[in-house]
Length: 296
Image 1 (cartoon, one colour):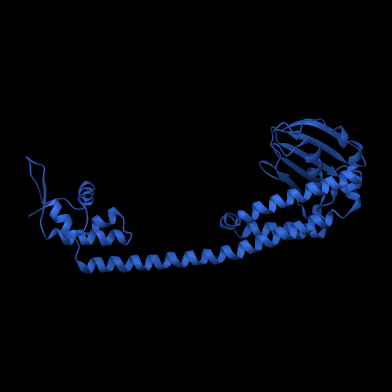
Image 2: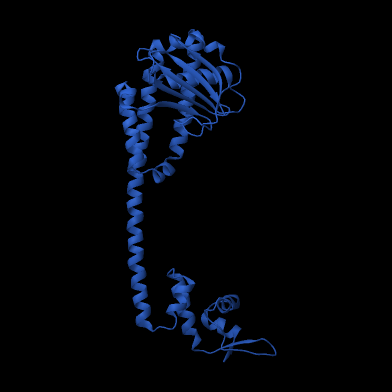
């Protein structure tokens, strides 16, 4: 028998490793002196150490190693072959994820660019600015705010593109494609889609919480400019703000680019991005234009 220090030198490890193996039930000393507590090992136990070390390096769990230790070399070789096959399958799965990520990340970036181009194009529609009742100076300020909002959003999307791709499946991408096609058609309500634009920490771009409270309402109006200046100064309070429109088919407020411009104007006038905003546009069911501002 040899001491723990000698056995550690024989195995090329330290005594702490041997004590750890003993503690977890992998390799106990052949003898422990009852008076001194000294640990002694048989030279033949070095083979067990070699098994343990190599199985650990091959990523076998402690419980797996305990099962394999009593076996002969044929049993170990079979276990190594199973591990190799499993690792090959895992590697192939990782490669598929890698290819999928590159494809989905590129598709996501293309849709982001396409959406930004779409909003830029909608801002060229003078009816939208007239609908909001902005003068030339206010329009320039709103355009700047839209550009800033889009730039911030695009930077966030690009920096998080890996996470987006990893967490998005083909159905999510399909929905985004459908939304983009609908936006380009310029007739969202016929496809039953709701147009929303959001900022800050809004919970969901399309859902208004049931416990949200109405703080301002207008109905029967022709243009948003008639009442936009009457919105109370409560938007920058840190609460979530939900702008809900129900508009006639001929209203400029039904334009797909309107929600983004509405949020930009609110951000300028009331610092309303503090808390989050969502603008939701639905088709009117009674032939009249309606607006309600809700908060939570």
